[in-house]
Length: 424
Image (cartoon, rainbow, N blue to C red):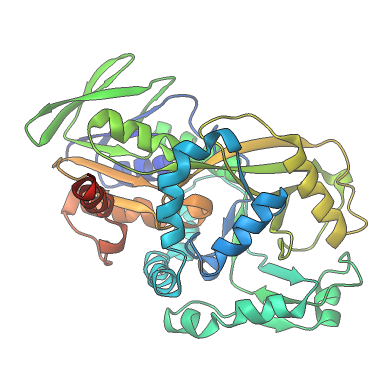
């Protein structure tokens, strides 16, 4: 085969390196920090094909504006960042409609087709990580919240995805006795899984290193050396690295890397927050999604992780403690006996988000041997194995077994050219 440089060592980059190496490629993986140490480290680790939706959803605009102005809700927009975000936000809100949303669900369902099999194959291949097949339970105080979600069931069925089972208030509390008495009901997603993402990344790093992948930590991509439409080398702060193929999988930094390489990729950093408690925090039987509060909980071996929020404030790792307190307060509302008051490991990480909420997977526009895999927002862990397989197929075979047109990076170039042509 040939040589491929993977730029970015999050879960997407690590799995892409694993798949490329498995297919016989000589692989060099570079990361500006340490592989697995950014957004892939402290998220909830959910593997949820039946809950995979574009972030841009119908009705999101009005509720988002109201909650943001009140300083409430799961989305926070940092005021000083608004001027630089206006164009991106305008494009995002234009995609918050039913037609775009349904097209996105259909595209994600196709990509997710073999997700569970791919995760099982990783375990069979000897990748060491913690994985639970313990379902996901969505709970709500107001039954109307569940009615709204159930309206998507026919679309899920058409896509071949699992349909959640509606539980009454009594059934929900019987399933999870620690829930508050006022819970109005739940939706049980019976097939979903969750993994501990930091262990997944550590296991992948161990596996790819043992298989011969060269890993360079603290190595940042600065530019490229090209010959016409072909990239000859990526120029890093440690010198140039030559290869036949290159892959940008740099998460929230992917937009910056693309700009340095000469094309446009509208990736924004959507910061999420989590708190990981020890066993003293309390136990729950299954992962929970607290619908009105938009907070998730993942039980692990000896730990419980609470996570949520989407903060648009640019690329930074500054922790806003009121967001963490909001997550703790929400968890206590649904789970009164949960000891979430103080302590635990507090974390923030930056999810890569694009305006239409659909990942960017495919060849970079205008460059024959440069590819992109980013923009997965809150679905990075869910979609990582399928993304790795799809991008490897495109890089080595020139095509994929599924329709990758919805994920084409060139879709943003076309929009950018139209915007420029209309400018006075």
